Each structure stands twice: as structure tokens, then as C-alpha cells.
Image 1 (cartoon, rainbow, N blue to C red):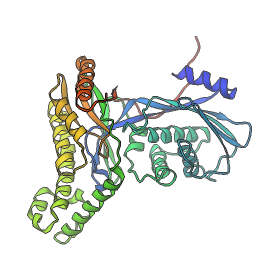
Image 2 (cartoon, rainbow, N blue to C red; image 1 turned 135 degrees about the horizontal axis):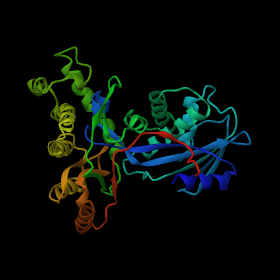
Image 3 (tube, helix red, strand yellow; image 1 turned 180 degrees about the horizontal axis):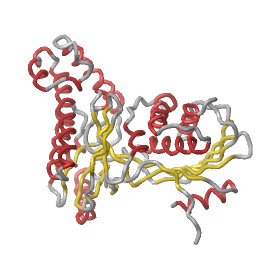
Image 4 (cartoon, rainbow, N blue to C red; image 1 turned 90 degrees about the vertical axis):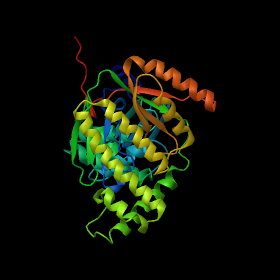
Length: 386
């Protein structure tokens, strides 16, 4: 892949290039906990976005995407939101460059194998790769966390998506054989071992679009905030659901709206599942971790009510298949992918079985993506010729 993008860059722009690489991510457990100042447990994957770049000859930012066959050109002094994938590159320039523009022209070629819309954060990978490219090219001296925060701001201001920091953080801080327990309150993190050579992570796409995700996501945030406001009357030290213990919630259940109570109960339990899950992984107990994944999905479906019939069917069916350790809905909900831990020797049969059973039930074949936990964003150094 490296030689291909170098060759393509040479053919299209006529000169040599540097290459920055940033992976997509998965989140093993800890859903909707980020905006409640809780924990998440993402890992970088071996699917990535590559950004090849070199100085341009004119005062233009020239962009080309191999997979889309699209090309764009912008003035280096005109960084503002646009439609489509170029907005992420324009946003990173605006957020990272001292003058919010480029000092000279730049040619950029984008390629990769992170599927768009499958919950692997292709946009965060693009921001991370280009942010790393800018940092290297212009010697900005930025930390990886600063690049991640710029990626988050780009999503907010240039793509109009009010996301958390997890996706950008995971892409830039990934480590092979490890997940990252990220504290969304203070951005402290710890690497958690995920060294299971006999296990594959398989995402099964429900092929259901997230039509309700945006409005319902905002509603869930409001419901959590309503729970906090009520519970603060009994303990002023509470600032988020991160501060609430389950016994306190149960004690004041009658003071809470029944729906708000269910939302709060899920978040409190999900945070504890994540902490317990990290302990299980440190003990190399994947069976116990997998049970937590099933519990998480049950909570997402019944308490947080962000699942759908197709996702519930997939998890129920997956649970009965050979070689499966655990599964749950991943992401905001109302469709998207089911993240599954499958024994490597059973992975091919698993994919065939779940595609067949889903096709029989819903008349469509789900896309399946197999992957491993891998390294985070990095620069590709030229391969030396023998």
C-alpha cells in the first residue's frame, strides 16, 4: 500500500512525498459514558487512512482522494467549512496553523481502507493523519493530544458534529496489543493489555442507518443532565453521573422520572462494567470480559433504549455461534455495527453463518470487517532500496 500511494503521488503531482498514517478505531466497552465524564476503552485497528504530501508550486492546497477519484483545489488563505471530506483537512489547517492558513502551497493525496459510515471513525483517522502531516511538515512541535483536540474541534466547527475526544485520541495514541482506558473527565489514560493472538475482532454491520441517532443522542444527554440535577439536591458534590453510586440512585429512584432513572442506571453500570472489564483483561480472562459485553448490550437495548430490532437480533444470534466470546452494539445506536470477539479459527465460518442468518431474517447481507488491535498514527519512513 505504501509503494502504491507513493507511485500514485508521483504520477499525479510529479514529485516525491512524505506519508502520514492514522488508523480507525473500535471501542470495546463503555458506550455513552464519554459525555457523562466516565471512561471509554478504545483501540486502534489495522485499517488506516494514508495522507501523502509535498510542497506545492502555487499558492494552492491541492487535494485528491484515490478511492473517490475526486480532486479539489483551495486558496491557502481560504480555510472555511465545505461539503464532503475536504472540510476535515481545511479544518485541521485552521485549528493547527499559527496564521490559520498555509505559508505556501501543498499537494495532498488521500487513500485508505477505513470504511465510511461503519463506526470505525474514518473522519477522525483523516484528521489525525493530516494533523500529523502538518506537524511534521511545518515543524509545529505539537503533542499528540494537541493534534487530537484539534481534530475534535474540526468535527465540531467544520463538520458540525458535537463528538467527544475518544476517536481522535485512539487514532493518535494507539498501541499494538493494547486498549486505552481513557478518563473522559481529565483525559488521563492507561494502556490495558489486549494480547490475544487467537482472537479476531469482527464488526457486523446491521446495514441500518442511524436515522434517529442525532436527535435521540441529544435527548439522552438531556435525560442524564436531568438526573444529575435531581441527585445534586441530595449530594451537592455530584457533578456528573461519574460521581453517582448505584445505591444512591436506587435510594432516590422515586424522586426521578422513570425514564431518567433508567438512563442513569445504564451509565452508572456501564462505567463499572468498563472498570471490571479492564481488570479481567489484565487477568487474561476474555470469557469474563465477553459476558460484560453481552450485559452492556442488554443495557443499551432495555435501559438506554438506543438499540433496534436488527441489532438485538444480531447479538442474540451471534451469542449462539461457535467461537464467539462476546458481542454488543457499538457506537451511538439505532443501527450501525455489532462488535464481536471471535476465535480466529472460527472467524470465516462465523462470518458466513451470520450473513446467511441475517439474510434469511431481513433479506440483506451484512458487511463484516475483521481486524486486530494495532499501532496508532505514525509517519511512514521511505523504504530503503537494497
